[in-house]
Length: 391
Image 1 (cartoon, rainbow, N blue to C red):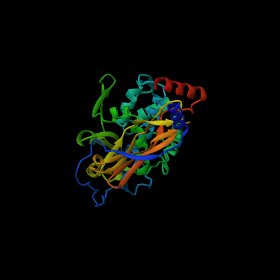
Image 2: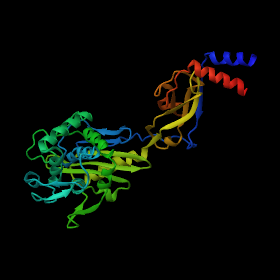
Image 3: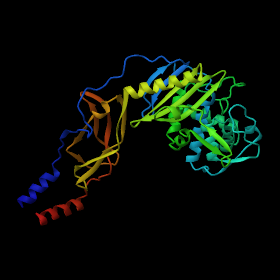
């Protein structure tokens, strides 16, 4: 009887006590944290920006919000809509894309498509990404939306969704001999570049130096020379016209960090490429990416629930930090000793704080990964009987 009364008293006593405990990251190391250099970059261009792709953190900018003609860098948005339609299952890479009179009439960079000719979606993407083919870009737009005008409307709609505040598109190619208000800022281009490279398959094409179509009958050469000559380069798109001068959105990856460097209106191709490399060098030399993946923690005990414990965890987290600091960040877990039922899946029950010394790099909520209803009286009675019998 004493054992029964003690069990009953413990079961119905409501209490909570919050305890803070820490898990040091496995990659903790000694030494001072490197700080970014204070010397400001000066880029020979109308506008420029350097962005980390995972978080969208801007590492450097120069006149990044003034809009200019983007030339063929426009095709980043064209390709984004194509990749989104592809991922949505509206067509496959092997589907055939017909070439209209309008598409075949495009000048500038082209692969000399003929009216009535068909190429696969994949080949059209290759032509657009690698060789910056205007005819292929228009053919893809017509295939996706029925006409170039309808596709351009979708480009402007999507630009608004991405927060491209200074962008306006009049065509899918960037040809600007007859346009009146076809423009983007460097920040706009970084935003749409970030969206495009989230479709990982595009990097397979944008990182290709040379390829071919028509069973090897026509060679494609990448207009982005950084692919061959800059370590870690993965893409993305060049552009040049008399109005736009020389533009480039370049992506590169090192040590798990992807950077997007945008240069608009450089005076020459060589200066554009060198200035882009300087921005990428600056980013990789001074910054790193701290990342924690989605984590399930040890379960937490429950009070008054129909289960003894509740599974808990947090979503992934990423932050740009000074280079070397990413290896010295500790994770503090703040959770109560127990949770009181009822508990719903998704309830915030604590937090994970990521610290570099005394500085908090960031935090994420810890949530219940399952629901734990309040225990019913019949279930409680069975539990008490089981405890008496086994005790």
